[in-house]
Structure formats: structure tokens, C-alpha cells
Image (tube, rainbow, N blue to C red; front, side, top):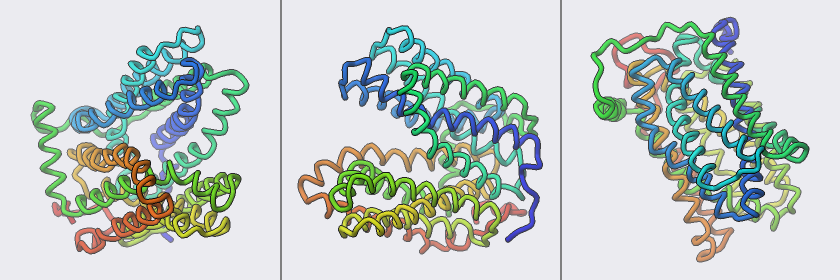
Length: 411
């Protein structure tokens, strides 16, 4: 255990955490509401829902590097306020279309493009803003608190959204998401941070993006985990999303799927609480080892084990996913130079997340060709090996959990 001061003693962090709590809850409610809204408005056409989801994901990936360059070039608080206000306007307009009975696929998809673009600017800026609020000493507990809030939102948001959609319809639920973005922007406006514009002369966005890539390649410990996350997202995410419910029903019964997800949520919350207090000398190495736990549910499904094993595997996966996220964010914020932090984080996110849609498209054909259970076993095995392989790198294995005091920022 460590005795460093709690980030909750800092007023700026309290405002930031409050805004994120409201925004994350709204964002966790939005997918359920949006899915029902599109299906109701389109007359149950799944193609419309796929188009709307793609309309949000594609600009998120396309503009992530631009968002990272912008966050490193301008005040991150300003970038976040603008992104949240833009997201509030986009989601509010979608809610308005639904509430007035004017659903149209081009309009909704276009607004989701705007929402995805705003998310591309917000995500890198968030990582860069936190060190400005709490300093280096409190980064791990601050990330643990933020991760706990995010996980609570993931657990509660879909259920609350389902109840709200059933009681009042999809429009009010999406309007609530729009309000949550506006509240987050208001909380961010209360912050007083020390971070301003960078000291170097302004350059073109393309030059900033190239500079971020050079920094990403220079820092030796960043590459191996990013490659591991790419492989994990390629083989694990889509397999779990698509085959997880089906194989659980076939091996243990439909009701067990909900228990598995609940156990996963408990694991997420418990590991966040532990890392709030527990100081680990080599936090990145711990996070990388923990990421292998995310593959356990697929292995259990592939081996056709029964319900207790599946529930335990879901709990283990929740533990691993939360530890990995906190370790990665904290390591970036401690060891990447502040002037390049958002760009390096954006490259890591882009290279990791780009694999998700590819994996989702491949799962179905592979399952038909080789069998569901074999694909689950193979995906779990590859994901576990990919998670552990970066530990062979000394730069990853030996990175210390502490803000460096010298210029050796690459571990």
C-alpha cells in the first residue's frame, strides 16, 4: 500500500471527475437507445443500424491522429470543451429528429459522423489533461478512480437506458446523453490548469502528426504493448461479442450470459478499487500480464466448461481488463513527454482499435469454416500469447512506476 495524497483533495480533479461521471453514464446509455431508435424509425432494418454505427466509428478512427495533434498543440481543456459541446449538439439533434418523428437515415448517420469526430478529438485530450490536474504523484489513483467511474457507467448505463426507453422512448434517452455532454463541458470550464500552448512555434497539423509518429517510435516500451493490443482486438473482441452469447447458451444456458457479464463488472470494479491503494513497482509489466486474463472466457467457452467456470472466467477477465487500462494510461502519462503525450496516445489507440472491425468481419466466416468452439479456443490462445509476449522486452518489463526525473523518457 502507498500513502500518497488522494487526488480527490484537488478541486480541479473533483470537477473533472464529476463531469466525466455524468458524460460516461450518458455515453453508456446511448448505444441501447440509439439501437432501438434506429430500428424503430427504420422499420426494423438492421442495415440502417449498421450504417449508423459505422458512421460513428469511421470518423473516430480517421481523425484520431488529428485529434492527438490538436490536443498537443492547443490547450487541452479548450479542446475538450469544444468536443463535448459538439457532441452535445449532435446527439441533441438526433434526439430532436426522433422526438418530432422525422427519422431519416442520412440525417442520423451524418450527425453520428459529427459525434465520432468529436470523440476523436476528446479521447487524446483526456489522457493529456489528467497530468495537468493531479501531477505525477497521484496519476495511478486518479486513473483508478476514473476507471472505476467508467466501469460503473458501463454496468449501470445499459440497464438505465433500457428502462428509460421502455418508459419514455429512445428520444428522451438520447436527449439525456446530449445533456450529459453539456454538463461535462460546464465542469471542464471550472478547471484551472497550468497547461497552455506548447513552447515551440506552431507547425502544420501534418508536421505535428509526423512528429508524434517519430516520438511513438523513439519510446521503446510503447510499441510492443500496442502490437499486442492490436492482436488481442483482432482475435478476441469480435469473437467474444459474436460467439460469446451463442456458445454460452449452448454450453450453460441463456441465463448464464447475464451472470458472466455481471461477474465481469464485479471484477472491473474490484480491481479499480485495489489499484487505487496498491503501488506496484513495475506497473506496466503487471498490466501486460493481467491482459492475458481477458482471454480466459474464450478458452473456457472453447473447452465447453460449465456455468461456474464461465462466471469465474468473466470475473477474471474483468480484473485483467481494468488493471491493463489503468497501467497503460498511467505509464503513458508518467513517461511520455507532455508535449507529445496526446499524439503518442492517439497512435496507440488507432493502431489498437483499427483491428476491431476487421476481427468482427472475420469471426462469422471462420466459425462456419472451422466450427464455433475451435475458433473460440484459437482466439483465446492467440490473445493470451499476444498479451504475454511484450514481457520479453526489457523496456516493457523493467519500466518503473514513477515519473522520471531525467531526460530518459523512453525507459
